[in-house]
Image (cartoon, rainbow, N blue to C red; front, side):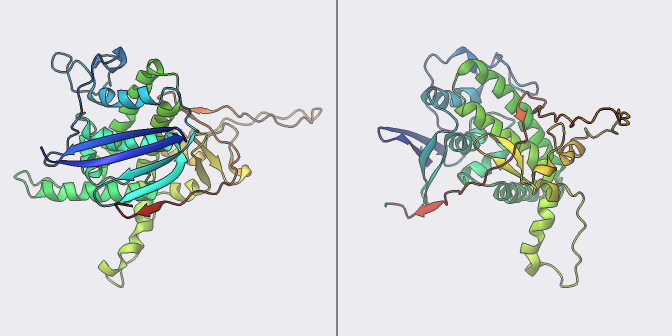
Length: 336
């Protein structure tokens, strides 16, 4: 059987190198995985099964995603998410080498595993796995995902149904399903390992799966300028449907602590949740009238720094950000 191989080599320290060789079937792009002997209980299908899972325990005794995650969880059980590692990703086309946090590397591997593991809810992302881009940014993700989805709509329009649409409602639905899936996976991992490297990788992925649908339309308006050669000279730039993207730019994702951190301390709300996130998620309600202050008291207002707990129990907390220099990706030609 011919395969497409994607190899992750992760150097945790001078004496420890972990290698993961992901083999994809050249025709179906399914993961060619080895059978897991005596899989642990947390990989069973009915153990914290996703609420929208279409699989039945009669045909599938174990969750296909959990089975493929087992190797990662088992081999990183003694690591921390903030551990600095050197990762080298090798494909037929290129090599990429970078020093970064372990949780980001694990999240990148999960980006590859999710679509090809056999889960019907993640299979929509399979083209991205075939053309895997390790450690990709949010902007790169938006470009790749929207391009993939529109190409899928083109193929759909050429079928007998002819139902292809240049709309992104379906893509938003896919991301909502991924959020539900991440919630269930996080529950599984609570009993699977005490290490936070894989748990935080799931958290990081879920933050992206939440933010991408919220910022999608605004991101596309910004990217429109890249396609000016295709557009009429007198075409008007479409109006931004929301200003969430501009508001989001005032925050940065802290990959070490998995937090959205304000670039300006004054932007932090009293409850630790940005107003634009509340509005985008439909959680912004009219504030109650402020109580009349007692003139006899001149005490400073106590700030509520409680974290924002998402619907899946993952913490989204706003803290002041420290500027850090990031390592640049280094591409090395194959064979070196």
